[in-house]
Length: 279
Length: 279
Image (cartoon, rainbow over all chains, first blue to last red; front, side, top):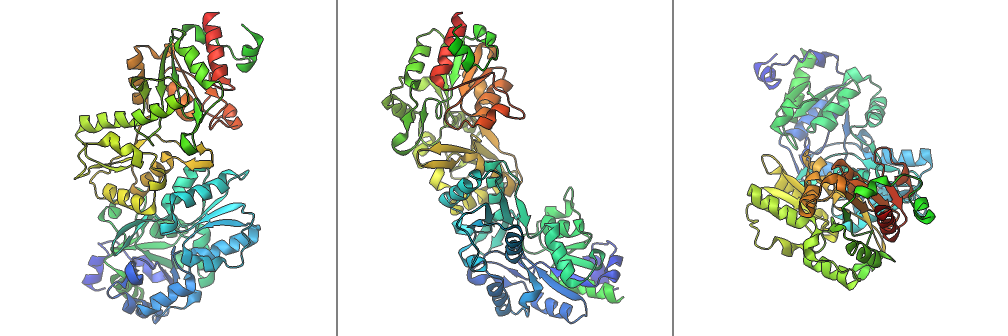
């Protein structure tokens, strides 16, 4: 064990890494910071992803990104130097489509313009539920009133939220995320939304099924303590928080969620995982 | 006691009316329905207010209306046939001004354009709190992000909400009220807002002080079960719900708030109060 790595792990034991067979990576705030022109890669992350994929560990990507179709999102990541295949990326929209199909639901959609393509062919003429994603500028008073009117008109209001994030960082500042508008509509209609995406256990389990691994064999690396780390831990996985993206120092003293390790960035996390794994 | 009145009171005893010396009236949904052109009076309400004011009971008006200055609001009511004086109307903005002054606070304001005048002369260059009212179309994604950025930049985020209503009825449909955006910002910043206006006990007590009456001597008449009836009851007043405005039949079986009486409208409520009072 190299001293640099043990200090990065803040003295906490990383014995558990020895049983790890797979890694799930959060994307925004771990691989890149979002913003104008699609964002920019976090230094060392592209190289770290490459190292991980060549290590023999099974690697999957898990994002609550809903401002793009999964295809366009992966194209953007490729332009930033990440060699990722679409089938390894898990995002809320495809999971939502499955739910709509399985339960025979017609959604009223309040999602980002660029996500609409994912819902092509979905019947929406007689909506019996509302689906919200990170709609950004589309979260206007008028559109929120419309979604509310659909919900309150249903015998039992049914609200799906693609993630429950509070906010995220763009290069020009912090932006409110979908969870904030989920809470708004929950209060307006006195309902509880079903969250599709992280930290929903169902969502993480679909990734584990695809990896064909047991929870204790997998570690999640993310910048969001509650949704990435806490969500993964509740499923029986390990959770590592990186000090990039939306990380805040107070996360290291959170009252209920405690990461299994903190690392300065993805490069440091991968270095620690591979070192402890091999040791 | 006339049989028509007793059936309106749904068989519940109204003995308590005998000790009533004052009445607080909610305005929107009780006196008038809001909407295009300022709204329209609810039939019989103007006459009922007149009867009440001539009865010898002390009458005050209590509203969470924040789309207008109190002066303009009263002018609107006068045009609808309600002879009301400004000093008898209690609304959140003047109460908020008092709090800002007493606590030496500078607000970032996210309120309706037409309310801004109430805050004329208030210093806002270095905001150390955020005040939200029923800003309607001003609740844009950009303005919400701005208010959020101010809050999250404070060492201890301080959020005031002028009311906590869920929604209200305009002639062209239901509209989301300030409480929904309060919940949104509360979740975003992990804080709890201070509500100024109904159902805050402090707000009701300022009305009671002005009436110079004890809580058990006053009845509140409103269409909002939780904020009007429940808020007044928590202060020791009686609470009557009218079946106009935002009233919904399910209110009569609410799990925690039980009105002291339900009446079809203000005219019926005043008839019942005056009849029982005199009997």
